[in-house]
Image (cartoon, helix red, strand yellow):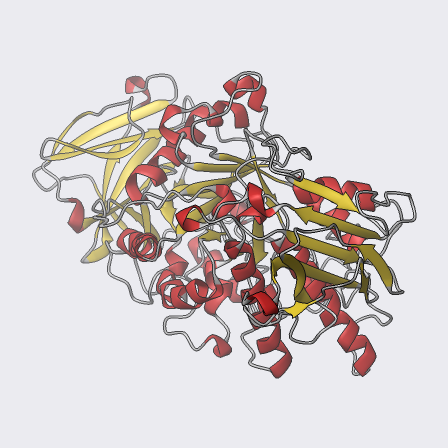
Length: 637
């Protein structure tokens, strides 16, 4: 690399130290960066047509303000240049860069520290043609996935697998499933290599001897990153120098055209200051019109972010918010943009699902929870734990392939393997596992709050018992798109669960049910039942629960009242009877779903009528859902 000190007709002057990164100023650009106090530093500019031709612009210590150094160069055509910085004889990329590019064909696609095959570019601001759909939490169905893992397997039958474009190709699939929001694991430029300290490798010849393909990969993307730049690895192969930003913008636009939202995960490391966190979130909101952020990192000032006026219409998801401090005590926000995402629903409902004692009363609470000021994100599986299929196949983690002697990953799985660890050929075990999965799906989709699907669970995706596949950029971590008969049946069941939820407003109310008849409609909005109506069994050893959502408290389109929905839960190993509350003389109970059946659902309009009985017999480890309706004799459905 040849560093040149003569400049092609440039005028060099002081830049704007108040604006970090590279910004257009007049006919040129201001470049601003943070450098430790006394270190010598330079801005390096690489010609795109020949990156070996490098121009070095000093950033004198004498002209710094605090730790900020800034230089202005004009005239400068950003389309012709890459840039980076040098400090203490180390090359580094601009933390505020909006796009990172491969400057030469010799480098690997992975982002590593001090890699001189990478350069920053100044992209054009993308043009978006759509507006965010702004879907309330109660009407949302979130699907979480990793951009690369979503479409990398051959079975995905997707052009441009592992890219933003590949995700676009799968939008019709998500739409058909019933998804309203896509949550993406980090899409910004995170560092890829985990198990090698490249900070100590300064010699370029030594660096070339390192086989990055054999190093442990940061597949998930949580860790140090360049937070303003979309991930270059997720761009189309051979993408032009300025279109990566546009490719991500196209994905957001494509989702919005289908009335779907885009939610991004951001894991902030402790060194990222609070004002920088806000600046990053502002950038992605204003530049790409993303609909929300799932904030990750224990040190995040969540209340500070939640109070930001620019983000008041943007979904913000975190482990918890102090809504009283943000809005005031018992104050209802005009738009509920905050939501909790934590393990409590997963842990409690997994224990209830496998029939543990002491769970019935807590399960009843979790299934109705939906506070006024903060939404609730409910899930049975997430990235850092067993998939839904592994939840019924494994009780112990099997993370040996991560290279940490199975020490990584949680030991608190709260799962039951149905009698055998790992894959089974025994028909009874396989049938029970599928039924337990149907139970989980139906429980999830009939709970208040917002359901989240971890991508691939609808297709019985397995990670072979690995409950922490953070480094598995392979078949273990990717979604499996097999078209086996059982897989297709489960996907159909999940689709039916989502459709049933959407069809019944009482299952996704804007506020938490009060357990009273506060509108004097005849019955409480929500009530619990046991082997006798109105008397739930909440004892320590109880494994059953009857839940009634009274239809008059839900309104469909055209002001039509919803049907009443009764959910009969039996997580015990024997059949149980649950009492059915009385309906009006013209109404009967009809079974809409029964997880003991292979298909799970009766076709709409052909639900099984159960008139003339006061109690319903629920098979072992089964969830049944009944709806109110007119008898067939009266011409009802």
